[in-house]
Image 1 (cartoon, rainbow, N blue to C red):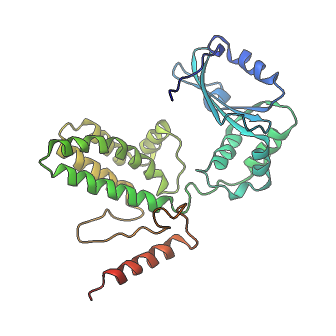
Image 2 (cartoon, rainbow, N blue to C red):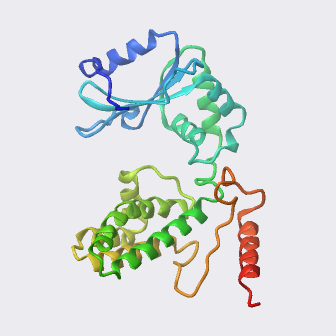
Length: 286
């Protein structure tokens, strides 16, 4: 199967005309403008960001990416029933969850259409609700585990004389660097807001970390680049632990491979302790 984007006429519409067309549709219960679209502080590089509240319909999209009036446009969609859930229990959602994202958008957005008043009611609840946790309970643990794994593998590949292994280092660093960037916020229980907000945060709160990132980008030697990556990983994970080292064992908690969703019935720290004890039992001298 091949995939392609559908043609659209919205690129020829002004934002006001686009919003007017949406308001005329009975399925559109509400429209919220977000970011610079809401504040009116658009620059030449700004995109349009909207949240649509739609009538419950299994055919309704989750998100639409398009162009309006020549600008890249992101249209996030949520059903009326999801909005009702948020109003009923707003404090149960982690900031990184989809519900948490909607609550955050409601706090900061500007309503331009509200057919039944639901959007205003949800916004009032969101603005009165303190932010939830930025990451799910296991988020920091998996960030530490995944990044430690990637660093160890990158160093293993680099040590090989096989040119394929050494080139594979470059590929691993591509996604490894993205993991490091986002994990910085996860392990500090800070919300991820995208690359631009990350840079602004580091400029204000951790310029040494930003300098380490810039040094990584400027490095051209593969070996030194891996060392720079390892240093970024150490800085990223500093609040929660140290990188894996030779002579140690790290045991991941959770259900086994092929056993279904990887969930825990106990707090993460208890599950890790139990998993470590189990492994020690398996590997104890006979």
